[in-house]
Image 1 (cartoon, one colour):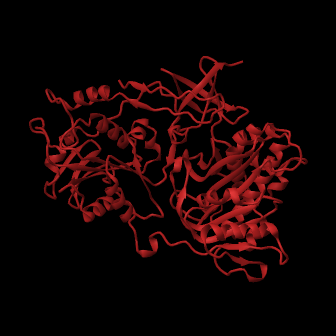
Image 2 (tube, helix red, strand yellow):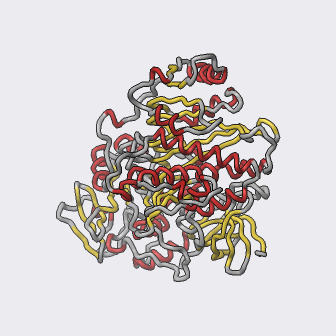
Image 3 (cartoon, helix red, strand yellow):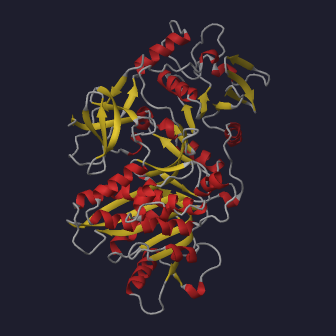
Length: 602
């Protein structure tokens, strides 16, 4: 039996959007269970080195009352390194393709969070001490492997192992086993491949590779061999490494003086001490950004009217953060690039931005309209991230419909807005769905597979009590099949061989059209309509989840969002529970969330 330990949550204001919660299986309980399974007898400690091969992995005990619906989530290619040290992380980054994999240091806090599993493609874990009690680590890694969706690279120090049980073949005693060594148990097998000890699954594929730590280091050749056994793509050649930033190109739509354009150009040149190249309709570059597609699609009056592009940037979001205070009001700036070498996501996570992704950042001042608004300003700010993800979903649905020959504008009733039509438009599978609060997923109902195709990042700083300067960073997989899937893959899956496919510029412009329309609708009092569109477009209707509240676990059903965009759920006891976003500590797809506040449902 696994017990749950909840650390006290932070006391936050009523409408704060962040709640920190950390849940972990009790180390003592897991150790007792695993020690009994492994028949350790009088042994008081269990370490990776002394783990008997025949006892790992053990079948995970599943709670019969678990209400979560099994979902196949296509994992992002994240490599999480636990207890490895910065030097080893740098070595891993040097041998894997940076356009495919993001390498993180997994902190002890995130390790015990028990939500990292759903977003980790490879776990690198190090046993750096001569001896120790890693029973909890062993049980958790075993559970992770039993899920069948992730892989493990274990780095061990072969010295300092206490005596194993009589006749046991342990990890430490098997590291230098002969090439023909094999130990089979059920669907799992231990073998030597490429001078590495490997755990293989029923398909004989290595899912865990053990590498020996020698003289306090892991030799690069052995590390590369281990990662190759686990199926990771290596760095190909110099072109795969991070390129240097390239010149900025700013589009000027008129030949006469444009004060706003001149101000934006000056801000960039002063901030980066380099000239911004001015282009216009008469001298568009042949390669790179499809300027014609962008302006042919763009229908906005304020958002994105002043595009700036570079083939390579560090991070459009970080660059805009540095110049935000100097930009003119309602500047209309849209900064994009083909490649971003240091893209950022939520909680300062790395964001992979390979060629084929529409990666861009917008400056928007709210309220967007000059006319008196009919909405509460605080609600507008809270809804910004939801509106952005909804705009992306609508843009992708529109482009898919056009690519497969569906006249989506004629699909709805007269008098309905384009956004309302797209929110309820039925398209061939797979579907485009919003994942609360601000991601967009491709959902294949037939295979019950969920794959992320877009993410957004928003921030706001108050310039006045009722005015805010906002940055919106958006990444959309358009033609890049890796790291997960892309819009072109979805269109091909539906049509086979489409006549044409939308460019990254077309996707950006289409997204901005819907974003400006949705913001205008919200400001004019249309929050209820946007809420209905959001619920029509999301993937959580009727989803059953477990909510941790204090020392209790409550089974409940997602029923919608409240006026501030927070999740509403109804428990089995008819309690109305409000669920707040908390970055990577909240995993909707895993069906595990945390509540800060609840009241009896009316």
